[in-house]
Length: 229
Ligand SMILES: C[S@@+](CC[C@H](N)C(=O)[O-])C[C@H]1O[C@@H](n2cnc3c(N)ncnc32)[C@H](O)[C@@H]1O
Image (cartoon, rainbow, N blue to C red; front, side):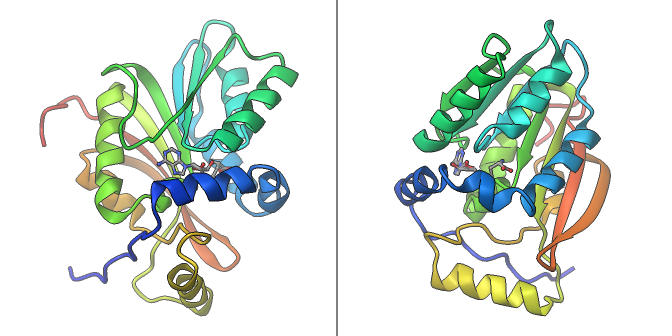
């Protein structure tokens, strides 16, 4: 089936770091009524349980890290990676305040090359972050996710989803993405196709909306055959 291509992300990683460093102070306020309720739905669907070892990619200000740390309990462990030093600082302070520092380990770095061993995690959570990697890098990030996930491990992606027939909010959003590539760096992507092309098996998809834009919450599993690419 022919589908129009998703937009490219043209800003550099250095620009991403600078923008998210600035945003880190305001991000909670900006996302409280938009992204956060959908992130919480994704966390519910991922349904992490006690004792699991979980990774969050693009942890932002750290709300999901706390929820994951509470879900894994004393016998589990949570790891997070984010490219922004500002987000790292805000999330670290939140973890200290919540007295959960012994359950959570944070890395500051680029999720296109995950600094973790193969077969390390039971689950991965990635919310409003996959859609800010440029098109070729989406496959790289998901391939890295498959590498570090255990067999049968699961991934939850919450992301703005591309529809073949764009509505007005989607067209306006894409226009801002083209005009302000460093600031409006994310754009809608084909979430399920990206997961399937990376070799994941889709388990569950929920479609929601944010500002009139489609958002998908996808749960997928890392199948038994890891060398099937
Ligand atoms: C739109 S925010 C979402 C934050 C959080 N997941 C949430 O839902 O509130 C995207 C996050 O991804 C991080 N990020 C951007 N590019 C990244 C990369 N290449 N590797 C890791 N994190 C990245 C940003 O610093 C930012 O914290």
